[in-house]
Image (cartoon, rainbow, N blue to C red; front, side):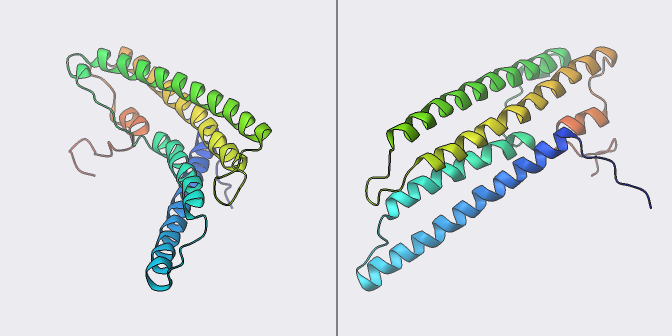
Length: 193
């Protein structure tokens, strides 16, 4: 029986990013259920969920942070590519520079979140109403942004590979390279999926 090929590091990072997105989705589902319970409690019984705003604030932070790694891993973020239309090499170089700048931004965000998380932990900061310690949420948020770094680094490497490929192929990227870096480009040579 043939063995499956070993998972590459990039594939493992992408799976972890998808798992993080699942955490974010679960957090949003919990927030939705809590919102319905809070509204029903207020309207039907005159009793809201105690500390709802504290809990929802923490859930929103996790849900938002959990989406970043998956968005990067699947190349689902917003990008504008108008200058690359002028010249194929310019487009490849601009993509590389953009991915490099975003890598630096995610490194800075992760570093500052780490500093903030340590501060929140050492100060013993809690929520306002029901005094939930907030440091675990910030540890998870920091970890999710740290996960963005290898994902974005993989995009930088792929963009550098694109520059190298375009140097050997003046017509631009071949179909295999375009679909490996940009999964939304799944069309075949005849324009069909």
